Image 1 (spheres, rainbow, N blue to C red):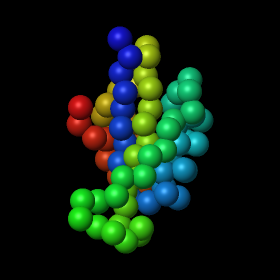
Image 2 (spheres, one colour):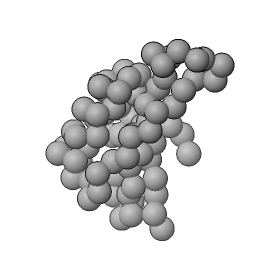
Image 3 (spheres, helix red, strand yellow):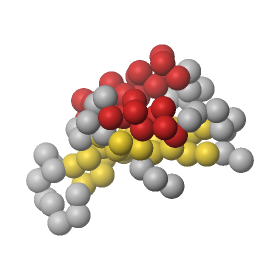
Image 4 (cartoon, rainbow, N blue to C red):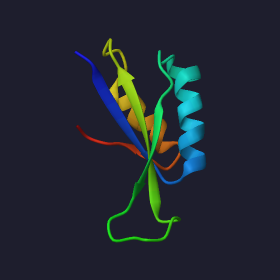
Length: 80
């Protein structure tokens, strides 16, 4: 079973740094995907969160560790 984790970050810079750090710190096998997520009802490009999508085919990443890691960048792990 392939598990997908979604980390929500406040901006693109944080998301890019988290994606790089995930590879280094957690050894994720694939480069995480970055996705811009505009907040509902907001037209301003500044009002967007960024998602870092991490595939976890071996289910070895712990949700609590990912959530703590995202919190270091003012983010969080989205609940499934």
